[in-house]
Image (cartoon, rainbow, N blue to C red; front, top):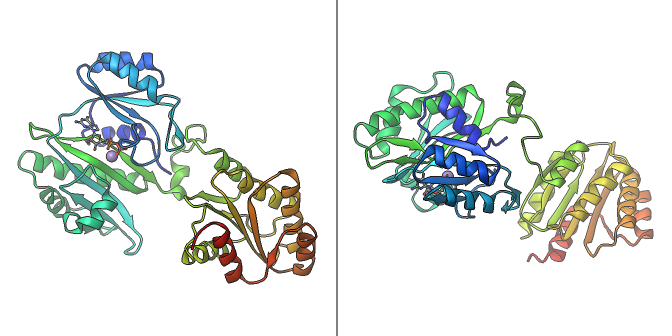
Length: 377
Ligand code: GDP
Ligand code: MN
């Protein structure tokens, strides 16, 4: 689970990572007051969980409290990349001489945390990894031994700093690792870590992703009221579906995580783009299938729905009845491609065909059909 920037900043503060003075507000009036109290130039920052806020207009430099008021008013209640802004951070503006990058992340292929450091921060790290991979230093940390001084020295010296910033960067590496370890993070990132003209360092941005399996340890962050789920994510959660939103236009609905992933792969391979991952689990009855299909029918991104079911404990006739029930309740121009196999397959097929829903037998041909209808190659 991603934390908001202000939550990550609070943690950084407790762990001795330098963060510019800030306050979290939810009205323009509070923004004005906060800017006045902080004094001088401030940065108004939308608190949303999507990446690239700055480029999307969610980070603005304000010269005075009036400007902070105006930017806060603009941002609060607006949407940034589809996410509603409910809070903004008013932060003391930092004079930046150079933007650096520092993070600790779990590398799943190695099964260990790695420290990533770059003297060229501020930009998207994936982009930097593509264009200038030699500008990113990667240090694998043995999770049993934890971060050692030599790790910190190596990472800090890669940032092209001179004293006293060099020494401070070492401390930040050690403290960031303490955060990473104590909060069971998947990622703890500072981008940018700002080098100021007077040779000090400030964590201008703060990003933390907690491991969902450890969330029970941190009830202060796990509240659904704090976290903003999209309508679709919230509905899926209520029904205990595994649901993840993606960028494409082909809705995917399957039973079982393995089949769902294989179905997404088959769509990708043929040049299509899944709109989501939706696994309804095993043994779903018609009413649950109806809700799942309805969810995808409602989703504005979905143009085609590819339903791929392998009947075991899930019965194909139940699935068919669920699909038909969902279709009867809406008028839609969305195309549906169904592939059914397994328990009560014939009955399922009969129900669907009676209701003019086309059923395919093989996964390959069904994927091809879905991609074709979705406008892929
Ligand atoms: P992100 O777009 O969500 O990553 O938001 P950031 O907090 O990283 O801000 C984006 C960019 O805005 C940074 O890379 C900086 O270039 C700039 N920025 C943010 N805060 C400050 C600040 O206090 N002073 C200055 N000069 N620039 C800032
Ligand atoms: Mn950033």
